[in-house]
Length: 172
Image (cartoon, rainbow, N blue to C red; front, side):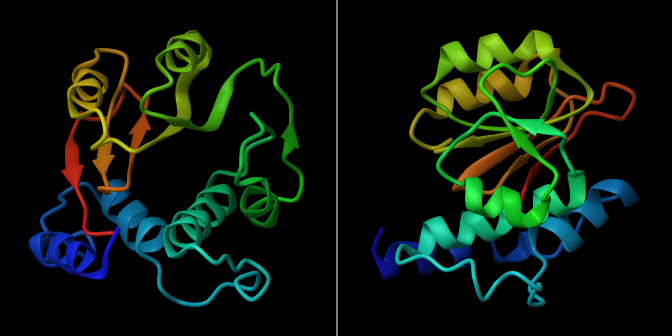
């Protein structure tokens, strides 16, 4: 993605920075202190990457793992970020329940496979949501999904049905 397009995306979403307009204290805290936390963490020096987007997403995944503290996860290309966020996470292809998972929007089979393993504590990160916008909208409207966050580069889905369902667009 070129620099001009990144700047355009950022400017278009500038009014959605730092949780402005979010009424839920839980959602506001999540946006402010997990998604858009800009203070340096203890592991940032060791978590560098040549690709700016991989590093940006990886650091957010680090903060997600630090916040959620999953016991088990599916292995993926961001293992070093997940492990830095929670050293006790075990990576296995055979998980009993979804605590925290990352998948691509095009991986419909994995999404459908993981859904029965989700509960009110589950958090799922869906990458490349603008590559298949219709699919992302289906996930947002799905009755099993709760609160969702559109970060442009990825989407985050909570499955807690005890909370009021909201869809937030966030400048990330």
